[in-house]
Length: 286
Image (cartoon, rainbow, N blue to C red):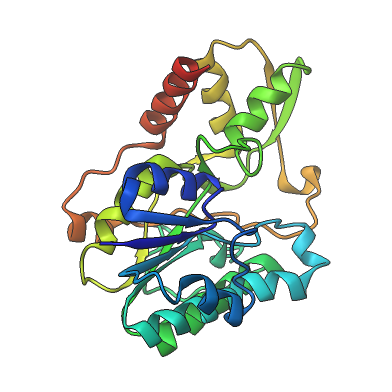
């Protein structure tokens, strides 16, 4: 199988290219502007791909409140253009989405399943949900995979990487304040990449949730990062309101990944296990 990977310089794209090796061709934003169908068609047309995995996204959550048009172009029209190419060429299309589509303020009793109705609460999540909706409606051979809190060994690890951000802050701060009223599941991009590679080889099309297992708050996650890294820093729990982010975040966005487990016949590691492996690999490569 020959696979095109967009967003190839990001955390997930980097891990996909590592796993796929010679069977993949990576496209960074400089190589391919997914907001232009002409650019998509020109870049992919003659390379005889069997599948496209879209990791490209506008993920500046707060900035999107002021850049709605840009977020929509990338997160809504980008998947439309890639999906249109895949439909024309009759190849598989896997699009990566987000837990943020569940923006309700009410906390459910159990993690969200794929069939539950999203209620996005900010511009970023609205644009991502729109991208999902477009792909689902017009192309049958699709996989849409929602994930959460990705961190991985990419060329620019602090860009959207909570683990690296915490370790970076600890170098200059003796006390760090972290939000403690948003519950989710941080996820290793390495683990997610392994699942996507397995999924794209099936014909079990549809919507999936894919994260590490169990759940935590960002405060609890930060405490575990520093414990495993052996760093002595005081972590103060604060509320979302105290943090003061411009865009509204989900209070609870834990995803039920039972469908992924059943289709791939896998066991999903906990977020604690994934974090420990990440920090070990980080130390080995430093």
